[in-house]
Length: 80
Image 1 (cartoon, one colour):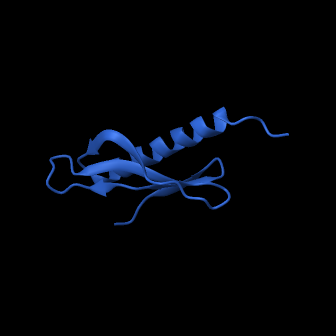
Image 2: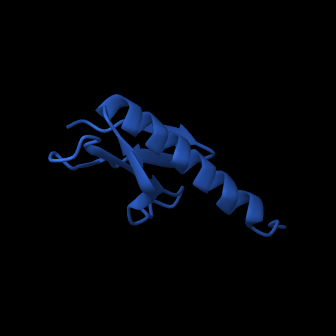
């Protein structure tokens, strides 16, 4: 399975969708975030977010990652 990824605010966000084949909604959304220094987060799951198709699960996972990056950067103290 190939994962979607995107560059956002100097971070790389990679969809990390977990398959649950015995479920009517077989894809659990989540993402990995790599910062500009090359450090990659643990899998950031979306609590109780399951989807019926892989493409939708990956797109929602990327949106979740962008929101997490925004939250982290917007809360960081100003440098300077």
